[in-house]
Image (tube, rainbow, N blue to C red):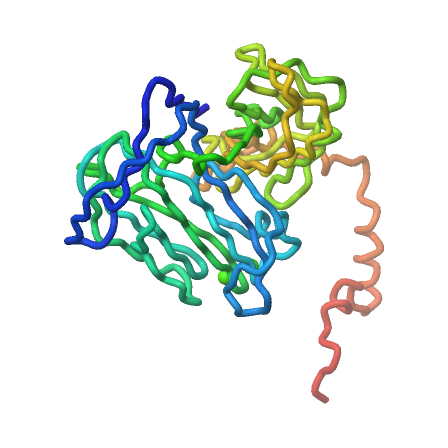
Length: 356
Ligand SMILES: [Ca+2]
Ligand SMILES: [Ca+2]
């Protein structure tokens, strides 16, 4: 869970600390509310007015996005807007760097994008292409200060992905981590701030920025979860014994993934606000749409599967499904050949129109 309260700290919003190289405008400090910070961005998903318009025509859904590092946006765009082409997304919030010094942002995606930091356009690639990474000029950031950030993106057709990265001072290029993002000032959000498919592949954990009351029976009727584009059946929900700010939801079918728990894709969770979830203070949790990592290590396989490699086939690989008392169709096929007729299988593979 990535909640890092900003209590007891007055974050400053410093205008003009970012922007075109060489600009040295006097910083304009603005107080940010002294409340716990929720790490993530507000994502607004729009349909475009026409194919190829690349505009923000009709707002269809608002999401909490922990970060902008999507390998495949298709199912998310469809879930938000009903379609996965001709869609635009705007993410807004603030970024609080951990190190002071020159910081380089870069973005790569399919299709166009632009990035504003502290109100200044630092990457402008509103271009209908894909997989051409764009890097901004390094900008001077100050650790602990909050800078406004806005990422805009459009998907035309075909595949869709987007990765917003940075190279902090003395660091290496990585996806901008969730821990550095804050929601926009004044945006009141009380939904899940992290959603994770746990290692067992059978549990979905929803983390909140507040402690919850024990959920009533059946709140999962009001939750909808999509894994890899497929709606996933849910069981009962309960408070996490490790902490009442998390909800554990049983998955009726295990989510299959790789043995390292690092597979691509995400868990996509929507709550309609009517399932009786409430904070410990009694405030009802409103509807939300969130997403997060799939860390399942559950794999489909036999108990011998881990022993077989390309270089070491199992000598006696058990095939119980091929055990039978007698072979029932062998004699008929052989009988056909003896009679001078081809086997039925050979007839089926003959081309429909053979040259005479
Ligand atoms: Ca698409
Ligand atoms: Ca595309």
